[in-house]
Length: 459
Image 1 (cartoon, rainbow, N blue to C red):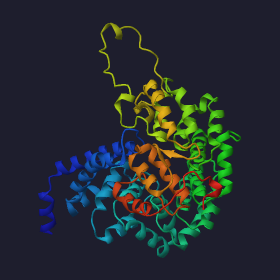
Image 2 (image 1 turned 30 degrees about the vertical axis):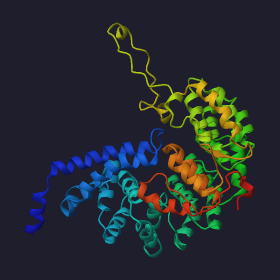
Image 3 (image 1 turned 90 degrees about the vertical axis):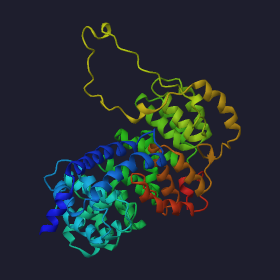
Image 4 (image 1 turned 90 degrees about the horizontal axis):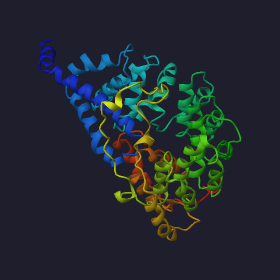
């Protein structure tokens, strides 16, 4: 009894608390950076990710005293901070003993939906350990049936190799009343055998929840569903009503699947003011030189100019790392007393106080792009698709594109890789860099990938 007490006495609890608070702060920044145009994967890995994991390590080295007094209570069912729970779960998973994972899984299935469950589930998906998915799926196959749903909801975003019990769960989960369960079914379908995956995904592509619908559309496209592809075209054309997020996902899907007609489709949809930003975003993934002709006139638009420039860079590589193509950030003018007298302007209570990722985009200098485009166009075959100026003809091209793309563009590029390899190569993009390392090695060995082949001819 004396030894544990001595160990507790040796812990500097003020430092431990600081590690927890700093890790929580960095976890929020890291998650936001996953959708940022300001980071690339290597930059994020050596900055926010590295600092976050060092603070997690600072919690883990405290051993049993820190785990019992601070980490496990953070995972209590009454916990009110999802981010604290993520950090606590990551610290507990630093222990190499596989029994530690089993204890956490046993705890997970006792938690109701809420911050503690969501945080621990996220930690299990993020932790840079190769044995997490296999132990979770093993527990699904051999453990209590009552625990199956909670475990699969938690592991679905990370994926893995589901067994028979997990695959059988897909069909009942697709009919569940809880959208969280249906979303997990759609996500797990991405990693499941084709027949079972398509039964679940094709049922969920018409789901009432937009996020479920998008996840199901992605899974169905990866497994080669002609029906899902036709649905994506109808959604992109506006032939059926859908949430804006669903239409945006459909526009990107049509661009990724290499259809030459997506440029004409985009041209028609640019006339819809509500869809212009979504169309410009999607054009940046289509890779067709003809799309650049649509984007160049938008460079001077105060709202769409930065987005159009991002799309042009995504196709051509023009101005990618050249500061002369971008307006220098100007210092904010000093505010005087005279300017702050009188009534304040009305506040937009519906506006997002944090802004959006689009607000981080640099402002282009249109003349520079217009001058550079003719030379770039002469080097680009209009029959091919391009990523940052490279013809998309091989796995190595996609690997280079992933490495150089900004974080928010990597999600769509990874989806295209999964579609074009029929799910053989699935690159997770909302994880720590160590978790994506093995799938990236599979991509390096994938050989020829014809990015210009339309969806119906992907083998």
